[in-house]
Structure formats: structure tokens, C-alpha cells
Length: 445
Image 1 (cartoon, rainbow, N blue to C red):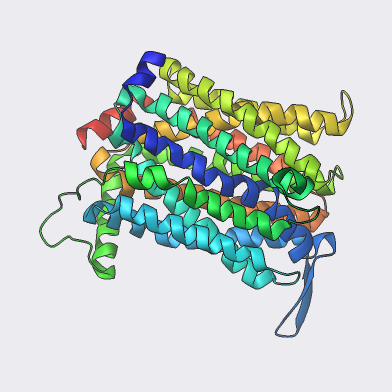
Image 2 (image 1 turned 180 degrees about the vertical axis):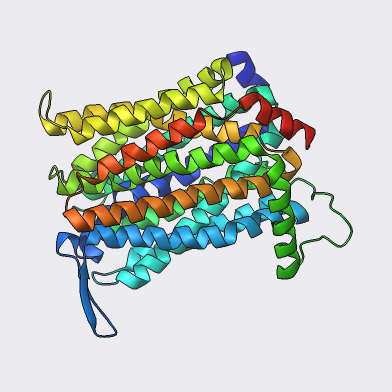
């Protein structure tokens, strides 16, 4: 393994560091602190927020409103992602667009720091824009994976980058915990920092640690297309998108995998984004306890991602991914039945360790499997559909979560819905022919 690591180029290492930069947004904003703050403070918590729409008065709980904010960002991403991917490939602007999405995401995130209780609509819009930029940046970032390293190293590179990302997200989360609980350690007076300062730290983290990829990644030349297909305007982009959709019919295994991805990513993202809300409302864990829980997950995910990175190189991406999905279902069923062995809070932490071990593995194996099904010259275009599939999952997740939570006023019941999505993802994944998918991608390169 160490011999292979030494063979990686400086560009590969600079590429992998972007996971370190963007994971701060994924942990602090999407999963641990801001989501809980939005649901519990901005949107009124369990008491919810009252609305008056054309004389129709209704109330929605805070957790449901956060799920709908996620939904807005998801729809925005689905609308933009294919066009961004096609434009990036046709114009040879993957890196330039990546930089733009980084700064748009960081600026939108910084604006969340000034939200006040009741600012539900403006908060949802800002969060939607920030999360959309976050996902678009990941699509463009992922598009470089099949281009910067040999096929034999894709699984390991993907696993290492996820592992680095968990360290980055964990360190930023640790900094945020110190800011909120012990600012004296940073030389500030007690109570010097609030959630707004934490949000600003995430924005700064995202930009500062994106410097290696901004300066170390090389732009790739544009895809050679037929004369007149330059994707220079909206009409040409639409024509290119339709041509791509027709061409994708040849990639049968890719489509089967994307269907599986929609299902199990729904479970992953909904589980992550609602875990702190569950801990807060069902187990009465305070902010400090929830941050420590997610630190446990982050630092457990580091060896988990490395382990699965090596595992998929030995047994294949499909088998490694299937193992991780089974682990997810076991962990969620355990959370649903908390208290069967010992104290529910203790078991919640133990289940979190299991989640950490399989979380990085499922994400790294999914990315490397899709990369192996992708023609390298059209990677941004294809990874945009990967991103769209993830966002479709994010529509199903928030809608399912919001419906169950609103009907039962219990986050506990929503867990079973996520287990079903993981099971469906696994069943579809078992139908994927990994060898055929790689062969088609090679023939279309």
C-alpha cells in the first residue's frame, strides 16, 4: 500500500485534499449544528412555525421545515447539474466551474450566520443555494477521479480522499465545539461565540483548504464534439443534454447502478442530516453531546474509509458496497430498538461507531464504481447525472421524513423508512454487472 501511495502524483494528492475542505459544510452545516439550529431555533422546534397561505392557516414543525429547505436545494441542484456537467466537458472548464461553485457555496454559507428566529423563508433559500453549490462542486470534483489516476488505483484514491474528508470534517467540528463550549482555550471570553460564528468558521474553512486543489489541479481539454456543438448557449446546452440522454441508453449497468444509488443514498443522507435532530428530540442530548457523537462518527469513519478503499481493490466495488449497505441496515435497526442491551444513549453511540465504519466505505465504493462505468473524457457530464441521482434521493428522503414526522410527530418512526430504502438499494445493486459496466465505458472512451 505504501509503495502505491508514494507513486501518486502531486495532482492526485491536491485533488484528495478537497474532501478535507468541503467536509466542514457536510458535518457542521448539514448534519450536526446548523440543521439542529435551523429546526430548533429558526423554525420553532417541535412547536413549529405558523403560516398563512391565501387564508389557509397551518403549522409545520421545525424538523419538517428543515427537510423542506433541503428539498429546495435538491430541486435547484437537479435543474442545474446536467447543464453544468455538459458545459464543463464541452468547454474544458471543469476546474474553473469548480472554483466558482466553491466560492458561491462559501459566500452563501456565510450569509446563514445572520439569520434570526422566524427567518424561515430566507434561511431556506440561502441553505438551498449553499447546498446546491456544495453538490455541484462535488460533481465537478468527482469528475476528475477517472482522469487523474490509473483504474487500478481508483478505489484506493477514492477511499483515502473520503478518509481525509472525515478528518477535515471532524477537526472543524472539534474547533466548533471548543468555540461554543470552551472559547477560553482560543483566548476568548466565555460566551464569545454563537452559532453564527460557527457558520462563518465553516465558510472560511471551505475556502482556505480549497487552495491546494485550486492551484494543484490541472484543467482538462474540452471534449471533441461534432461541428457546431459547442454548448455555448442554453439552446445548445439543451441539445447536448438530449444527445447525452440518447447516448446513455448504451450504458445499461450504469443506469441500474444509478437506480440503486438513488435508494441507498436516500438512506445515507437522510440518516446523517437527521441524526442530531433525533438525538436532540428523542434522547434529549444537548449540543455538546451531539458534537461529540459526530466526532466519534467522523474519526471512526477514517479507518473505515481506508479499510473499504483497500477492500474494494481486492473484492470489487460492488461487493464492498453491498457489505457496507448491510452494515447500515443493522445500525439503523439497532437505533430503532435502542435500549435492548443497555442505556439508549450508550447504544446510540455504539450504533454510531458502526455507522462510521460503513459510512465512508459506502460512499467511497459507490464513487469508484460509478467512475469505472464512466468514459474519462466525458466525466463531468456523467458525474452530473451521478449528482442528480443523489439529489433525487434527497427529494425522496426529506419528503418521506417530513410525511412520517408530521403524521406521527415522532422521529423514531422515520427510521424504518430509511431501512426500506437501504434494502431496496441493495436488491437493485445485486443486479449490477460490474465487469460489463467497465467494458462498455472502455469501449466508449
